[in-house]
Image (tube, rainbow, N blue to C red; front, side):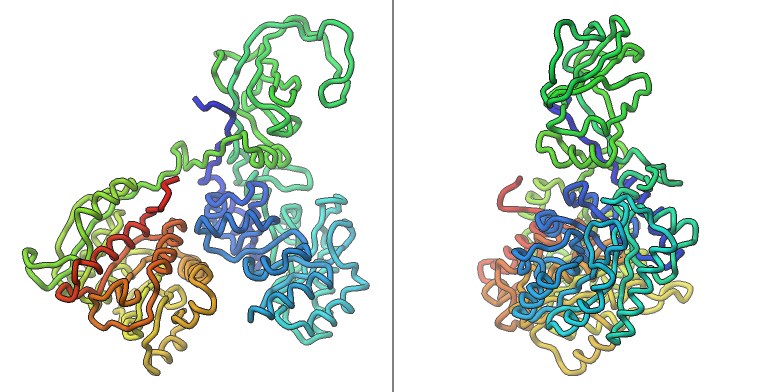
Length: 617
């Protein structure tokens, strides 16, 4: 039994709702930005939305965006609240697009982006009558005329916001006005807008009716996904769950009392004068939640025979006369509207419990430790310290199902990888020779429906492995698509290999890119590219990606690689993302490994990839 109230968050239902909404919008050529602000940027919610098909994540507070990024959410981020002048530097370095209506703010964003050699995308908001944010239509073209001349700024789209303040209902008329404004901007300044954004969950009815103008290709949805409702009449959306979030509170008093207070009445604790109906003696429950935690008027008991009588700052009082089987210390559950959910998710006194079905989300995994070697088992020198690795993974809740030795033959390696994947296990492969990788990639490509890959490597020769994957059974093409493959740490690349990167659309970050952008930003981009539209990612850690002071025992050492901390930062960010589906650690020459320094480093990095932190909190 929890000490205080808590909210359960059913991630499966959120994913289902997201898929319902994105499928509908996709039929009309509309991209969905999933809005997580009511959950204070909860990472598990954002990941559920992304699994359900949203194209990006929208947030209103920079603190929430930083929280999402720090917890491995690999997505494009849009800042929904109009940016303050004081936050320009943070915005251009942290978000991909922001919604804007003030020229002076856009100028500040331009200056901040230009100083850093960046291009920041903006969506200009147009006020179509709701009287919240937005440029008045008469001022739109003069404003755009100045914005297009600003360095470091790209006008990515035009948007509007309806129903949030003035309650204006999206209609064919005002949405056509938005499209007309966008076309005039494109014509007047010879630009092409990526987005015409037709509002929020209040636009769902218009989309479903087929009356949304075809020019609208973007929408920002929060409540429609999270609470399964459209926001004009707050009606349940077809094939969507309305109970993804439930508030639970404990009964701390259960007594029969009169239904009308006794004595002279004045104002209550909040300055109101409550009215009471005399129903005689009633069974009343007091619960451990109040107005400090939630908007009480936005609660509805899950049990239909219970009614809420009122609340103080710390207590909620309910009439439970008609309810059955209640007892002191038991719980009552409540549905929440948007306001109540926002308050509960914001309150530090309300615990948040992300769930999948009826189980708490768990990070426990089972791995198969597979050694690929051309040597006999007795003569092999593994690239990791097996005993130390096993003990460390066990502390992290990651368990070996078995350890197996695989002959270094491409077909054998491919079949072994496929077998492990088909058992829904995580293959942890170590191989002294990096030439083993094509067999690993082949097995992955033919076993997983959709997979991305992040490859840490110094040499461009490893890039060719992805251009050599054979056709699968029945002529099926391999599923490791080049657009979802990212190389990190390259510092020795031939002109032919460079051309292959450009032709294949593989993403590659050299040491020069890491110096310019920083490892954190490189990994944000790598995770986003490798995970977009996939079921997870494969990671190859070629030890030659690391500086020779960290990993000297490699076949072709090149000075100036990733530093010790850069390597750990990259591994930690992958671990936080929860995206890793398989892992290979390659390139080890045991004869060069004085005091097992390289093997120790490899062990440390694998543990970081599975979630080891300095502070286990």
